[in-house]
Amino acid sequence: MLLSDIQQCKTQKRKMFAMLIDPDKQSAADLLRLSEKINQPCGPDFILVGGSLLFNNIDVAIETLKQCTDKPIILFPGSAMQISAKADGVLLLSLISGRNPEFLIGQHVQAAPMLAKSGIEVIPTGYMLIGEENYTSVRYISNTMPIPYDKNDIAVATALAGRLLGLQAIYLEAGSGATKSVSSEMVKAVNEAVNLPLIVGGGLCSAAEVQKLLQAGADVVVVGTSIEKNSNLIAEIAKVVKEF
Ligand code: 1GP
Image (cartoon, rainbow, N blue to C red; front, side, top):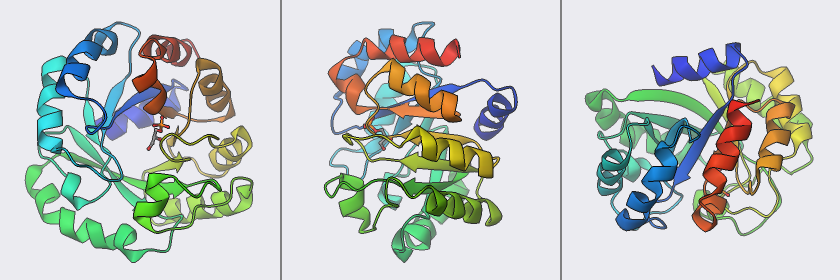
């Protein structure tokens, strides 16, 4: 259902906004405070929950979110430990920019029995780290090298491989809190080469930046860190996405 909604939006050239909640950074009180902004008519289309490394329990975070909103809650798991049957769906991430078998298949084997039993919707997603920063958490925890920021050809070839392997979406990721988001040139190149829903996130700080990436071909934009700093951005970004 979630994947078909995302695919339908792409076909109809409508864009989507996913708000990322990191349960270690947003307490239950923070989430309750944010709920008004999440639920306003100009809010996110769905919520992603997860992080490269979590200290807090994902089930508890989802339960709290479910008290705050009816929007779909999709897992964005940093590992098999972040799978929860309480979510509505999961981006099952294959870290195809990297060469670490643990994030290409190992964690998936760990997660598969619980995922199959839970019946939550699985969205097989080619996850591609982009950029040259040494210090993003996702780079350290995944122990993989990102695709260099300006190597659009490598990004295109990697996304194509993901499509040929049957993945249903591509996520271009600069890393949470990145100082430089994925370039619009790379988004354009990947979008033209691969007709799959294209999710883009990492380091997005303003509605103007979001607009640029939508114009380049992003179908879903993901914003987390900058909203933690300024919750008014929720409405600003949602407006740009809805009016695109
Ligand atoms: C990170 O793409 C997401 O996985 C969102 O990044 O926290 O920088 O918005 P930010």
